Amino acid sequence: MTGLPVPVRDLRVHYHRVNCAGRFAHFTADFEPPVAGGVGEFLSTAPQEELPDEFAGPLWTGIRQGLDGVSARVTVTRGRRHPADSCRHSYLIAGYLAGRAALVVAGLLPPEQAPPARDVTWPGQPVP
Image (cartoon, rainbow, N blue to C red):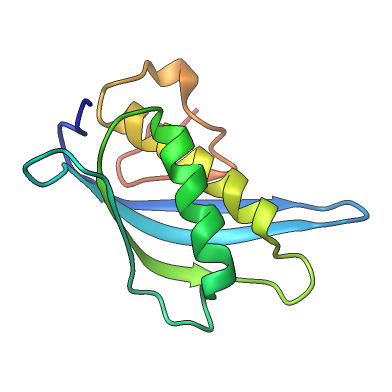
């Protein structure tokens, strides 16, 4: 399994869709190269009221899917939820977007495969 080669810090995901069943998931995460052995790890330091456990599982699943076999240590540092529009599926999608963005920033995917800037931002991101 390949490991993330460089740290990707302060990656912000703002997944928000408005329709009859809104979608809302916001969080900030740091992606680090894996520890020896290459096993992926997930840790949330966000308070429970910002990122409840019911959303942490789908978020991690989405991140793993987005990383597509690349191992990383991921720490969610902040979160935000909406009482009506946050759901497990929103965090699954947001996690996937974060994983893809981390691969782009780390140089493992070409920039044209980056998620839309309306959904994911990171320090030093080129302006479209």
